[in-house]
Amino acid sequence: MLEGAKSIGAGAATIASAGAAVGIGNVLSSSINSVARNPTLAKQLFGYAILGFALTEAIASFALMMAFLISFVFRSQKPSMSLVIFGFSRSYRL
Image (cartoon, rainbow, N blue to C red; front, side, top):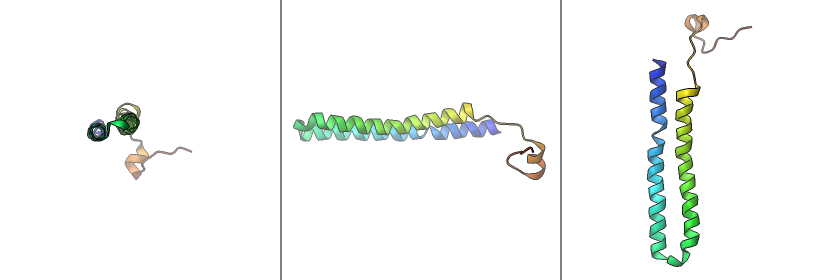
């Protein structure tokens, strides 16, 4: 059951890559539109477009990192008796 929830969480974390794809499309289409309107500013606008592309792509990278963390790093542990009996989220031993 926990593995299924982890798979759903990892899949939900990758939805951000669809938003990043839309954002990159908006950045590049705006860049092309701006260069078409004023070709003399092409070099300056290219720098802004690369910056916008990098910032938008960072969101997709963070989402991919979270999906990998959810899938491979966070391991499920067997519940201890204190979790079962008392409903504690963690078992603390003294």
